Image 1 (cartoon, chains in turn cyan, purple):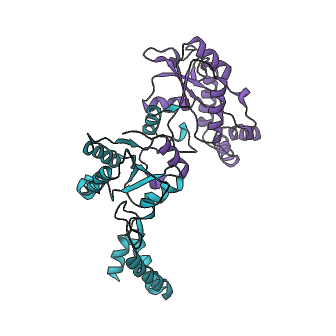
Image 2 (cartoon, rainbow over the protein chains, first blue to last red):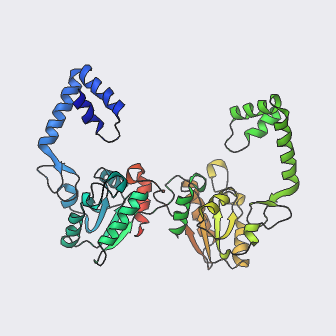
Image 3 (cartoon, chains in turn blue, brown):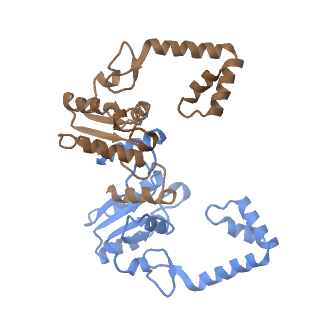
Length: 194
Length: 194
């Protein structure tokens, strides 16, 4: 049971206490939940893997994944995300039709995560091999996201690739009175022709 | 008492129930709160007014206000806000050093607020008289803010003034996983060189 709790607590967004409640449910609750979860984990292990190109989840029989090799997408634009779970969110926005690349983390010295933990070598070789002309950094707008963006710009310096970053400003449905000073300063700096 | 409750309920962000609690506090609570509020209202009536130029609050002895006539600011850039209470927030961001213009509302047909309720004639005459070269629309990023921005662009068509709008995108400290699809689509569209 301790091992189950420890494993559950390693899932993102799950703390010790939640893990204990989940473990109790799996042990003392209806047996079919435990069996379903167990079967799903086994099936995932057998059938699903990370795409060798972008890092997103894909079927073992489809690697690289559909987003990487599917038609109707622009090979020249690469959207760089921190985590593969960001990819479906950007897809849902309908605002992007290029390819993706998941870094599998970001530079966070306080957590012991440095550039070596990121898929940067893979990014560099993709830029060369796939004829990428623009990479869009879809990184967080916090200190660690800024550090990661700065590092990537530095590491790609001299290459013939345009590096852009998602606009920073007021989210949709917001207004001046709901915004913090840093967001307002960035929204002013990045203002665009109306 | 009913009149007091009704007056309090007209303040922004105050509902009927809050107004009742405030009124009770003013009537049954310590008398100095009532007297202080009363004296402050009287003093405001005597000494404070809306700036004839930007619409922000200012002393009667200082009209136009300090932001409108103070030195060290750029007369050529005008920041258009919906409400004068937005002005101190933009000032605090440190990202703007031009002049301000409060519309005193926005186009909201559902609430019966149309262009005639806005300080648009004053905006037009200021653009002509003050040599304004750029106006920054610091409007909400919702349907009514978009409608107001579109109307202002239309009404200023043909004039030699650049019209920009605050960047729409990820607020500071945010990330892809915290963003809605519309915000992501706008952040992608408005992406900037890193």
